[in-house]
Amino acid sequence: MPENCSNKAGAVKARPEMFPVMLTPFTPEGEVDYAALERLICFYEEGGSDGLFSVCQSSEVFYLSLSERVKIARFVKEHAHVPVVASGHVSWSLDEQIYELNRIAETGVDAVILITNRLAQQKDSPDVWRRSLDKILGSLDPSVALGFYECPMPYKRLVSLEELSYAASTGRFRFMKDTCCDIALIRKRLEVLKSSAMGLYNANTATLLDSLNAGAAGYSGIMANFHPELYAWLLKNFGTQREKAKTVQALLTVCALIEKQLYPVNAKYYLSEVKKLPMSVYSRTQNMHDLSPLFMDEIMQLDRLVESFKRHENL
Image (tube, rainbow, N blue to C red; front, side):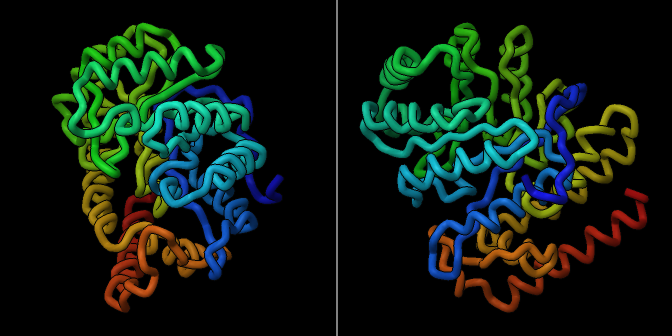
């Protein structure tokens, strides 16, 4: 186990939770860097994370081999002190996806997350998606907890309210990474899920506070790779320090615009240069050489802003 991580195993979950979408550190030569990954787990946990979402888009899942996806999921599960969920099915063939999902399930992660756009191509009808879901449910061990992830790549496939209701009724789903970025739809989804065991984890910062007030289970988004401690504070205090929560929410929303500046390379730069994690900025999804001096300066200014805000607000 990492030496400087707090052991949270067995902690009582009495508030909304944070599940950061994990990066995959690579060596400068492009191989998965497991030493850096171990330290990255510590960073998330030290920042107040309640769980980890491994092998997702931020992990560069579509650019990882199956053996890498399986090894990463198993490594994170073995080294984390908090629950771990993982996706990892990237094929178009449903039979191949089922094989991939079963391999991920074998790693012992706490939930296997279905990427919603894998179950049907963009032109396919909802019936195709439903049949794919039923086949997957029939091909996975019923004891394995499941979830959904509305991954934006290669296209965003939002789950309809009817599909969400059906999935919740099976009793097998525990996790929903919501990327609709629409508070009105989020409220409708929460109404569908209110009597189920399935929690909605919002990926969008701008709607996060409103979704928490509406009953969301927590946050699972990109910006926990930059300042997880502020999201942890918001999840813990939004109901008791309402005015300060609005101010924290406003800062987080503005900071989240950095997502558009060469992510995940910029997040790896932040973690290596600011947080001094021993990891390279290498990425398989972005050209690391596109990280311009301007982008680097924006990261450093973002950090100065956040640290000044924390001092001013006593956070």
